Image (tube, rainbow, N blue to C red):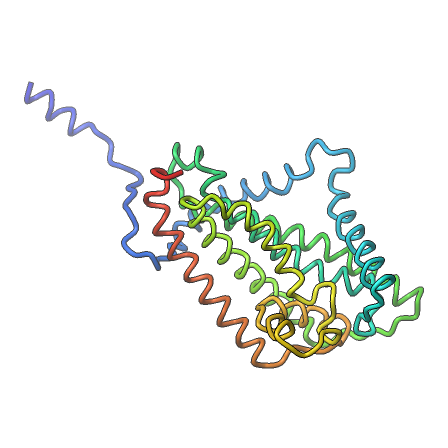
Length: 292
């Protein structure tokens, strides 16, 4: 018997992968995420393709949604309320605000349900759990790129056929950084809420409503210049997405740029939120299967 056991041990193949629990909440484990890059690409393709699968208009919804929303805001806020749009054609004003806001809100909403929505998958196979929210951010980035083409087309229409003056500023070079900050804000807030949702399911219902309210504390549909001085305007300026939206419009239309303290505030806020989100996410992923 002993000889058979020894022979069995000698013929046993060495492990190709050893999974150990994370030692610290602040470990980013970027190497693990990179090793699973093929899985990330698979999730990105799934998210991008499946959104409008089995719809009649398919990918055209990438364009229809911002156009319809811009027309609705034009009727409500420009025609009925008479609000100004910083000298920008209203459709371009609303579309540019929406473009940046939609990327942030989509990242936030879709990553905020990571643990609950993927509980069955997480319970069957191991892979770094951060792979899922990272893939959501990347798939939304593709959507942002497609809708950016729409904004460019409408912008070109106004320049060519409406004699709109071309006012692109050097801030256009900051566009990749703005995208990173929007992704960081959405990802950080999303995974933080996702970790909390494993215990407090009420957050699932509050987050959608809260995101809609948050949009109105960002100069997406109402210009900062149209807001009266007071607590509400102060709250808007403290919203980290405000400086992102301002910079985005400043890049294309040379409107009012955010103040320096707003930009620094947004950078610090994003880093703190992202680190806190990853720390809580890493902590919860060890035991969330017991509560989900």
